[in-house]
Amino acid sequence: MGERISADEIRKKQGLCDFGAARVVDLRAKQCIKDDISFNQETTLAAVTFLDAFVLPAIESGYQVYMYYTIVATPKLAHKRAEEGKNIRKDRDHSVDFDVLKKRFFLSQKVFPRIFPYCSYVEVFDNTNDMDLIWRTDNGELVFLNEELIKTSITKYLFDSISK
Image (tube, rainbow, N blue to C red; front, side, top):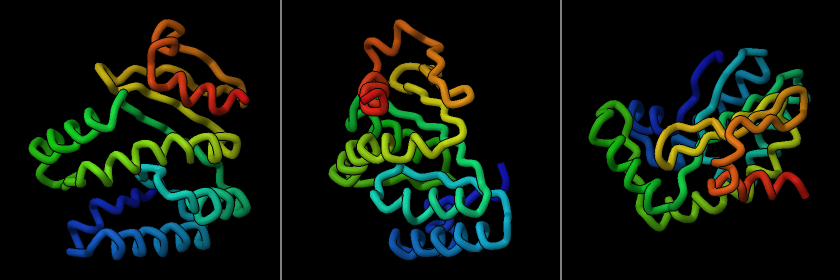
């Protein structure tokens, strides 16, 4: 999976604000693309520019994009998990104001269908209760791994958004 690029880790390690860490992520990802270095980037997909800024330049440089997308049922649950994670993993600070997290939660679901067609491989997980792999792609085709859960899962919205 190559070099890991994480804004949270950069922010904490270098003592930067969110914007500063995002800038370092941007510069490092572009450098990896330029130098043909494999990398992975943890993101909330909350930036509408992500497709143009990272995905398309990577593809144009010969990269394949693999997306592993995890979602929970509600922004409130996402916030609770972030707070729990902060207490468990002292090396990763996931403190996020609830209103910011809520905005990112819904924006991510709008960005997902824009990026999806450009991905060589996708796995979608619902982590509301357990980390359930709901569906994935295989040679561009959707493969449903949990037919029952997709009917009730938040991932149904994602599936519907790419099936139009």
